[in-house]
Image (cartoon, rainbow, N blue to C red):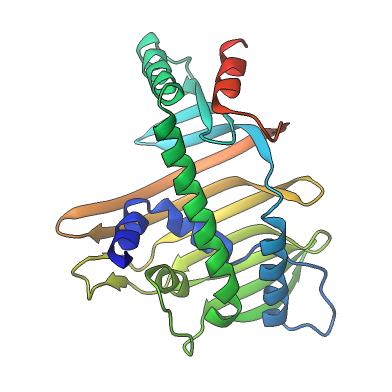
Length: 276
């Protein structure tokens, strides 16, 4: 089971960005006497409570990949998100690109097991995040670096006394970075983090994640209690099992957020896009 979780973690390196993000989420109202560790402890408790109120949104994403810029309309649903291609490198998509997208949409629409697999992966990631939120106050040393404009700046570093028990905890524990907290809503405005050390699995025989991997996440306030990621830059490298290389280089920004009905299905979102 542990090996399976390791392979899943490394094969989907974006999860590492999710773990970095988990280390610094919504902060509840802080008392002047609170130290940084207490503040983060309240942060994790507050986030665990708020995660039950998941909302769906649509937005326009601009994704940089393989020296190209893809602009997409994204609609979140109760199963799999719908991504509709709007432009490639500033030009309308070609007929071949639209056909490829339509084939992908139809495959998901007609394959309930595939949609369920995507949803299960998301649920597994959510469960992992919740487990990590509970150990964050002990996993790091926190340093309040004072206010910067409307935000509070907090640094976090691995706690040398903390002993990770799982592979996910080992990756999380290697993080080092800075969090900017909105002082009005007590939510994260920005997180910048990096892996301060190489993380090995099975003494490197199973795989590893390289030292120096970075993530930079920016968030925007959408409605009371709701903050969403508006930009993320991820640079992660490593190797899994024999010679399979991990290269996760992601650069995506998101804008034009609009709320979506909480029971929206993949079929409904696809129908909406097709009729625009």
